[in-house]
Length: 117
Image (cartoon, rainbow, N blue to C red; front, side, top):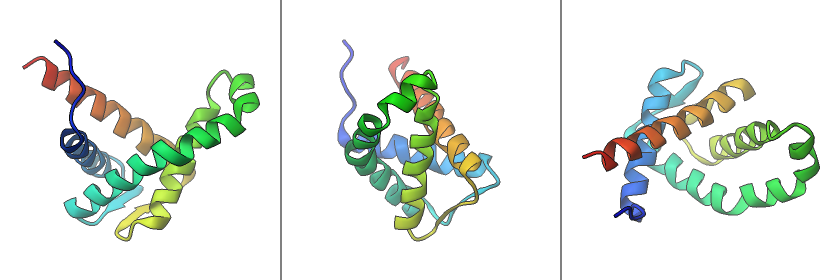
């Protein structure tokens, strides 16, 4: 039976994904694992509050771009997190897009790996 992971599990997985993405991307700097936890918390809050608002406001652009504008929304969310979290630095918009993509991919892989056990 599949059940949703708990809040603590999601926080740990997101923090690890942020830390690994930092290790893989040269344009991202995360000072410590505690900073990665802070980034995961801030991203969770922003994805729950700001992201839906941005998606609603940009529905026409998202529709015209066949959904590719969502990458820009993800970069905006990463940029806001960069401003809010001391110890995090993202060098460019392209790096923010790649960082967002890597976090999503790594998190998904970790959840799939956890289900297989």
